[in-house]
Each structure stands twice: as structure tokens, then as C-alpha cells.
Length: 258
Image 1 (cartoon, one colour):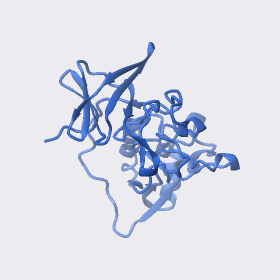
Image 2 (tube, helix red, strand yellow):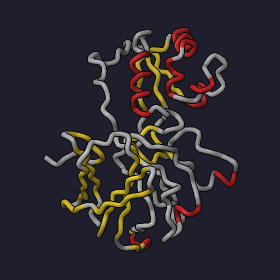
Image 3 (tube, one colour):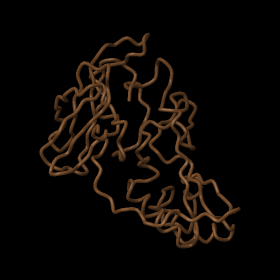
């Protein structure tokens, strides 16, 4: 069986695997106090792999890939571009648009979020979420629903953790809500044209890292989401995630390489 993609700690090692069948070279880029360290990855069929001899949960990393630069044929290889692991589950910052993301040969290590090697998580609750037949599903934009709420601590406003606050739970119970459906909370980027208009994508329907939570909405990562989801079934509220797989932060030919 093919080992899992992404970064995985097990048996005293940390393994990295990414699919890049058209690349000629791929590097694992580790970031620490001394700066960036590049490690050449080894080809394994359509994948590229690297293994570190230690477990390093929380380590910041990304990839660089070389190959043919032929935009007319959909090939955008540029080793100056730091790339986010498509299987990342946690990032160190939000995606932000910048002209350098679209300029060939301009290094973007200071602009692109770094993935974080996932730490072990406690097992999820054994009992599945309970949904009453004929119940009410309430769609929630996490930021819009909580950012101005006076009864939520300021540090939690606009985040997933705010949904477990007593004032929010009481409001949902008053509405007889059976489950909340969270609008996308995965890491997204504003469309390139919005900044010049003074706008942003408030709904999150332009994700880049499809498996990583947006650090602005869920700064505590997967652990924060798990804690929140675990608290809501007690008052009888289930949680549904709206996951979006038909976008990938795409733009036009002048869009960024992420």
C-alpha cells in the first residue's frame, strides 16, 4: 500500500510525500531559527519523498519544484516559488495576495504560508453526532456570526472556538437548532481583483489548502475544531462542515503560484 501523502510522524521519523509527476526536481524546505534548509526529495513513481530521522511535530515546511516553464501548456514550474503541501492540515498564517506570487523567478518564501507537521490528536468521540429527524440545520459564517458579539471574549471573536461559548449555544437552543453547518473554514485566498476594490472574500469559497483550517478562523488548528465539535453535542447540537473541492485559489494567467 502506498504510504500516505503529506507529513507524517511515526516510529521516530517524519516522512514527507507529495505527488508531482511532471517535476524534474522537488525539494523539502524546512524553516527554523536559522532560516530555510532545503533537502532534495527522491522520486517514487509519480511521488516525491523525504524522511527525517526524528519526529518533528509542529515543524514548518513547504516544497519547491523544478520542471518545464510553459504557461501556454499549463506548466508553471518555478523553483523560486514556495509551494504549500496540498495535504497540509495546518498552516502558520493566512494566504495573502501579492504581485510577486505571479512573477517568475521571484522568491516567495516570505509570502506563502508554511505547512506545519501535524501533532498527534486525541481520538474523536466514539459516538457519532446526533441529528434529530426533521430537525433544523442552521448555516453559519463563523466570522460574521461571532465577530461583533459583545458576550464573546474579544480574543475568540471570529473564530471556531467562539461557537462553543454559552451565549452562542443559548441562541442556537432558542432557535431549536439541531445542527450547525459551517461555511468553509479551510484555508482560502481572496480573489486577485478584490483588493483593489477594497473587498475580501468573506465566505471562504476560494480555498487553496483543501485539508488545512484557515488560521484566521481556527488559529488553534484541528485541535480547536475538535474541541468545539466535542462540546456542542452536549446541548444537542451537531456540526456539519461545508467542504469545497471544486476550487483551488485559481485565477487567470496572471494569478499566483501557491
